[in-house]
Amino acid sequence: MIEVRITITGHRPADLVDATGRPIDPRPAIMSFLHWAASRAISKGQDTITIITGGARGIDQEVAEIVTGLRGAPFDGVSLRSAITLPFPPEVLGASWPADDLARLRRLLSAADEVIGPLYPTFSVGGLHARNAAMVNSAHYVVGFWNGKHSGGTYACLLYALSGGSQKLRSGLARPNAKPAYNALDGMRRLRLDDV
Image (cartoon, rainbow, N blue to C red; front, side, top):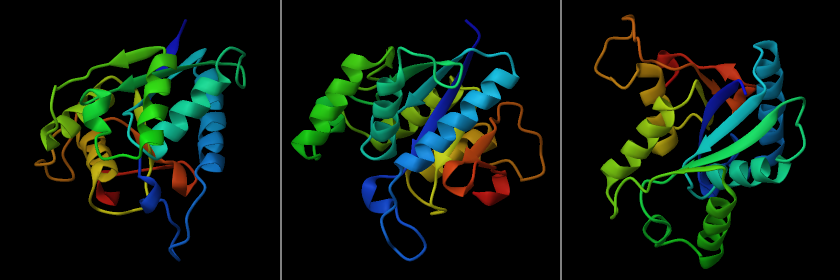
């Protein structure tokens, strides 16, 4: 098995809107991303793609559900795997969620090929950042389903990836730990630190 690991970050349902404020159905963008990732993996001699998500409502759960459903048979010539990195136990992460979303997370965790965490027993903002760091650090690159908003978890995860974990460095300096990042809501455009 020659594996590529890809971290996914994205918005909650309420933030998945276009420029006019209309809701976006993320599934076409998710499928486009998966076809793009499979083609890229094959061109690099990789036969397995592990998709790493963070278990949150929105893009994380949508992607994990699609990947889980596509496992078993080759997808565009590659095998897909699902990995979920939890910042906290499910009942803590989903404490304020509708019951259906928490049940969905539990199903996705049961079906995942790999579960990392929970990293912390109780909620903290630091735990969310630690989850993002763990996801980025274990990936070859990051794909954001990013609406361009310069705040929130998706933004923080992309910034962490592009800055190599240090946002204090000036833009032009080398970042040996930086990861490539792409925006799935913008045609898989490669992002630069100046974009975020």
